Length: 344
Image: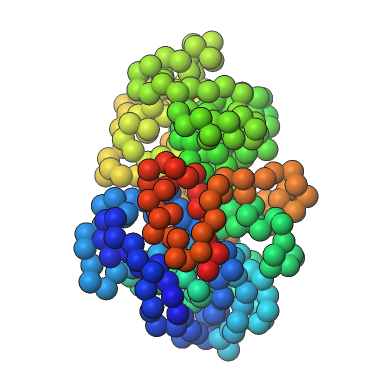
């Protein structure tokens, strides 16, 4: 089969690799009908050391179940499913607590151990606990929004929950990528009164406003902090969604939280230490978040997608076939595209 393989920073190729197949009795084999490139894929695209073997990339997908292992009970061939970016058994103590990304038997797609889904097909471990059957046809018009349930919409929602967004709250979203834009959707959905989008790309800002952002801060650093305080009577915001992962973005996030506020961080941290720990401490700012357990959120978010109350699929502004994936990485890295959908 054909798949996207990253061999090192900037080196993404479409290669013929061994066919995905059922290996364990709890596996499912899924033919991929939609996948996408994630902002987190851009970190190895910038920094990955050369590998002769490479990595089959991709951790977000919708597809059709082709076959299942003998222990799979809840899925059958022909089911249309969404694949969260982490696989999980659905039965361990952490899955029962809604923290599927900490499943004691689970893991993540798109690494050296488990091949990714920017491919014609993907092997899904722990299929019963991982895959969610969709109640639509494979070419439904809602497919882009349904695909966001595999990661970015669930991740934006996770950031909002970690930041304690609620009715009447003031919110700032740090980062105008796909996750940040979905964070705007999530904040509005949870009843936020004021939503400040922090970014500087006109196309993304326009979309954020359509999603519910009430204010825009395009400055960075100290100027951004000052501007947010101006917009919030000098107090800062109740809730900050940190959707980037850089030292500067986290420093900004803590600096714009009001005393007693909360920061929900979902940008993959690029530093070992967290900046601004002393301001967070002295201002009683809660810092929470992490890899979003999106499998836990699908059932809650799905009705809003199906009934058109939210349209997170609008973050996709480019669609490519497999041959177009390498250029899709370039386009996202150079901010020519917000998020690229892949139709193998």
